[in-house]
Image (cartoon, rainbow, N blue to C red; front, side):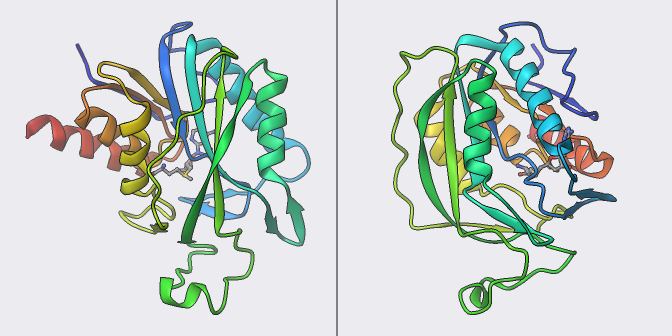
Length: 236
Ligand SMILES: C[S@@+](CC[C@H](N)C(=O)[O-])C[C@H]1O[C@@H](n2cnc3c(N)ncnc32)[C@H](O)[C@@H]1O
């Protein structure tokens, strides 16, 4: 059986996935703050960001099992181009409006500079001079389920996580965080979905743990980096 299934198109439609086939979703979505993903700028005016995320959530609802859990990494507030957005509140509202139950959140301290306008701020500078347009250091892991009886689990406490541009991607997920999450939520042979996979850092850890990964990425360059990483893992 194939252990990874990755697609280079928008996760607004995931026709490759059957209804109720996914056990676990973990994703770090674009936050609408102007990060450059390849040639695409992660910034939508008006209601277009909401439309994009809600279309993806609708697909998630279709493909996730009744026992499924979704973890979504978002900051509480972001501000870009003078506009402030309360992302945590919005995501909770959007998931709930699609029939998901909000189980709770875990606060993560993220020391991070995700390559705003292509510039990287060294970590040491972060505390002194926060980059303009940057988001708060507090990132939340929001936990949703299709079934309201599912209980929140606790992650192992880590002091902080970092995200630094790597492999040509402006904000790859932190491996320590992925491992921490999988140690708590993952069970062997689970089908795991990341609808915004980037260079598949989540996917690679899922495979290492014995799961099956499904991922979507809209930027070709990141998709091919991910593909090469899976092929390398296959060889070893
Ligand atoms: C925050 S990054 C995820 C990083 C990833 N966790 C990693 O470790 O590389 C969000 C990703 O979503 C991708 N993306 C944005 N809109 C998308 C869409 N509609 N469908 C699929 N991927 C999308 C971006 O290109 C970007 O790589």
